[in-house]
Each structure stands twice: as structure tokens, then as C-alpha cells.
Amino acid sequence: MDDCIFCRIATGKLASDIVYEDNDVIAFTDINPEAPTHLLVVPRRHIASLNTAEPADAELLGKAMLTAASLAKQRGLDGPGYRIVANTGKEAGQTVDHIHFHLLGGRFMSWPPG
Ligand code: 5GP
Ligand code: ZN
Image 1 (cartoon, rainbow, N blue to C red):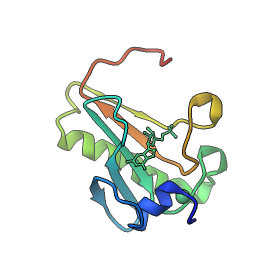
Image 2: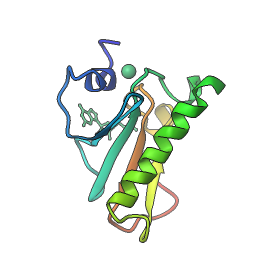
Image 3: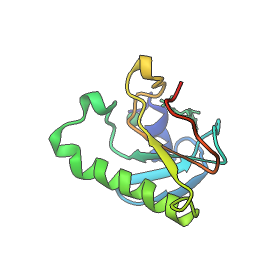
């Protein structure tokens, strides 16, 4: 989808600080980091959000989650902890309509989120 920022990043049409990529998933630094580590883990295939994800997407979404966990471990965040977030819909703060997992870590995080 040419009008989707994350599709453009996934196809190399828009520059980003890519930290991991394979045939299914890409991960890059969030342009507006909210924590010392703030990565976005994004399936290459356009899925708008968890609201439109289907059972057939389970393996891809599981792979994205495990990629986030692996990137967290590489950065030493598995000890202190980290947060994986999938904002879904406007009230939850989703601003890019291409499914993505935020990986946040490197500072203390309060609960519940604002
Ligand atoms: P959401 O608000 O949908 O949960 O998360 C979207 C995230 O994408 C935001 O944290 C925002 O900073 C990030 N973002 C938006 N546009 C770009 C971009 O062009 N490049 C990168 N690297 N991150 C972006
Ligand atoms: Zn997209």
C-alpha cells in the first residue's frame, strides 16, 4: 500500500533505522522514542490492526512477538524487563494503521498506562 508509512518502510521506499529484517518481519527505531529502547516490530504484509487480523495471521503475529522478545534479549532487557504494546484503534492511541508492536525498555514503566 503506497499510502501506508510502514509499507513504505518495509519496501525501502521510506528510510528508517532498521535493526532487524527477514522475509516476514522488519524492526526499526521509533522516530519519536518514548524510552531508551523504543523499537517497532512490523510484519511486512499490510494488516491494519489486531481488529482485522485473522486466524491465518497467527504464525506471522507470533513471529513478530518472538522477534520483539529476541531484540529485547539482545539488548539485555530480559533481566530488568520490557514492554510490548500493540495500540489498537483511536482510543488506544493507534496512529499508524499497519499493525506493529512497540518494544519499550531501559527505564521504569508505571502501570496502568495513561
Ligand atoms: P501508534 O501510535 O500507531 O501505536 O505507533 C506509531 C508509531 O510510529 C509512533 O510511536 C510514531 O512515533 C512512529 N512513527 C510514525 N511515523 C514514523 C516514521 O516515519 N518512521 C519511524 N521510524 N517511526 C514512525
Ligand atoms: Zn501498510
